[in-house]
Structures are given as structure tokens and as C-alpha cells.
Length: 227
Image 1 (spheres, one colour):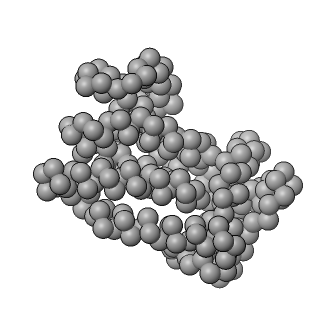
Image 2 (tube, rainbow, N blue to C red; image 1 turned 90 degrees about the horizontal axis):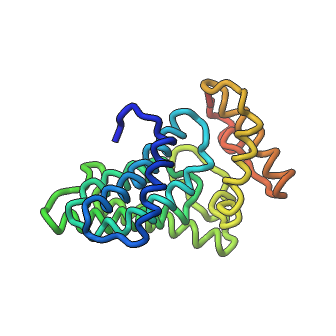
């Protein structure tokens, strides 16, 4: 999955090929066409993370991944590849808890099928029980957010985040906001210090364009040094 290619260009070509196949059959060429899109989505998401760019596209890449990966799940020969791909995609998806649950449920289904099929673990770091536990933790905080109990939301890592990131409204607007942010920072050098410029612009855009108040990780963690 990590060949040196123009990932975004190849993904567009794969989309064109897959779009001509409205319903997947057992034909190997059709299976490969679907897999090329799913694989390309993972690679494009990972590229966005590495280059600190286009990250607002990752949610849509995840949705597209699920669209093409789900029909592949019924083909046992694809389970190991799908399991690896779902694991990698999950590691790129942040700030979209409801979509993350959807992705993890697919990942769990594939992992369980693979284990039941031949006793293999999908990934030594991702036991099906651990995936199920993460789903439960996400659903717990989502339920609290949906009921307006933001103060009761528990942290899911060492760094505190504004609980508003668990709300449905956040998921509806954050990619639109971040697209604007990345456009504003198009000429800003990536690397050390970029997170502060990004958080400042994000806060400005969320407040002025969407009427949404958000506290950055720097504000939420005053004793932590971010670079």
C-alpha cells in the first residue's frame, strides 16, 4: 500500500474505474477496482496527516472507504487486507466520534470474521475486544454530548480537548471550517509551531463563520508545551 505514487491522482483514476461498477460481483477485476479506491482512501488520509494538509478531507475519505470496503467484506480473500486498511484508516480519523464509531464497527466486523475464519488476529495491537471497548467508550461520550452533559464527558487521552468536539454540531461544521483554515494557511510553513497558527485560525473561523465557541488544546492544557 505504500508505493511511491501520486496518491491523489491515482485515487481519482481508481474512482473513475469503480464508478462504472454499480454492484460488486465475484469478478476479480471488479474486486480489484473497489479495493483500489478503498486502498487509495487510506493512503490519501495518511498523506494528509503527514503533510499537515487536506485533513478536512479525511472524513469524506473515510465515508468513501466504507462505501467501497463494505461490499468487499463478503469475499474471504479480502478480509486480511480490509482489516489492515480499516486499522490504518482509523488511526487518521480524529474529531469525528460518530463517524469513528461507524468505521470501528466495520473494523470489528472484519476482525471478528477473520478470527473466526482461521483463528488469526487482525492486528496484534487491535484485538476485537479492544475495538469493541473503544466503540463503547466513544458511544458513552457521544450519548453524554447528545444529552447536553458536556461536563461529564471523560478524556480519551493524555491531552484534554474541549468537550464540544463530541457534539453533532461540531461534526457537521468542522470540515467546512478547516477547509477555510487550510486555505488561509496555504503559504504558512508546516512543522514546529504550525499547530498554534492552525488553532488560532480555527478558533477565529468557527466563531466568526459558524458562531461556534471552541477552546484549543493549548487553552485546555495550559501546562503543556505544544510544538
